[in-house]
Length: 137
Image 1 (spheres, rainbow, N blue to C red):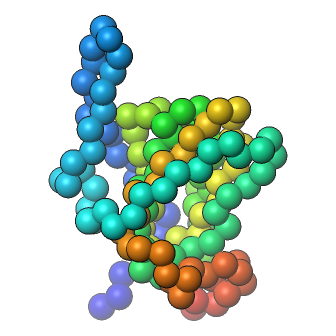
Image 2: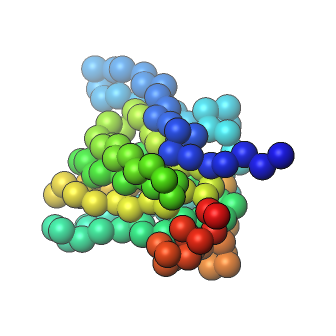
């Protein structure tokens, strides 16, 4: 049986926050997200009005965190679209495979950290929205 991936499979996950008068500390350990981390990258210095993402993954899962500032993540499963604003460094968004994502409305100085379940493989990307929709049929 195949489970249809939907935006409802994507979820916000709280990251443990250790408050301290010298500054807060947050920790991501193996049991927080449901995959082994194989790649880490981050987006920063995104110009005003620019967009990132605009693709889906066939196999890769990702966990996005706004380390600084804020941005919107628009998720689409081919039938439903959902927008989530990330703006807390102690909260991340789990995006499952098979979900189209676009990142927009970056605030000045925002940093988006991405923890990925796979190393980069171009073959895992669906970069044309119409192809994504066809993959859902």
